[in-house]
Amino acid sequence: MDDIVKQAMAKWPQVPDCYGWLGLDARGNWYLRDERAQAQGAFASGLPGSGSWADAEQASAALDALTDAERSAFQTLNSAYTAKHGFPFIIAVRDNSKDSILAAFQTRIGNDTETEFTTACAQVERIAELRLKAILP
Image (cartoon, rainbow, N blue to C red; front, side):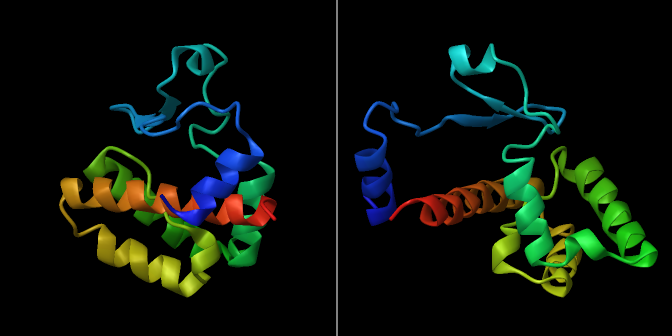
């Protein structure tokens, strides 16, 4: 078990085992697999971690200051990616710059869906790791 997981378990001992807690439906929307959590409703944007975390992460890669041309390129790639794979493009923004995210989009859109699903899941895990590191001592 990773040290970060041990630290999280020590800080929040009442939180149940989270393995397999996040799912992706056929429309590309994330959902919580736990029925009680699911009953509380979907993520506001269809993505986990939207809101203040995501805003700060996007700002760290200057995604909050895109030019019209850059925004159009990102939207076009995201639409094509979602149409091809059936789920949204996911990347740990804090590990990247605007240019490296664009390059990853261009590379990953050519992957097969199975590879991309595995990559997306790994990126969700990395996002969670970065967020845990930000709040744990």
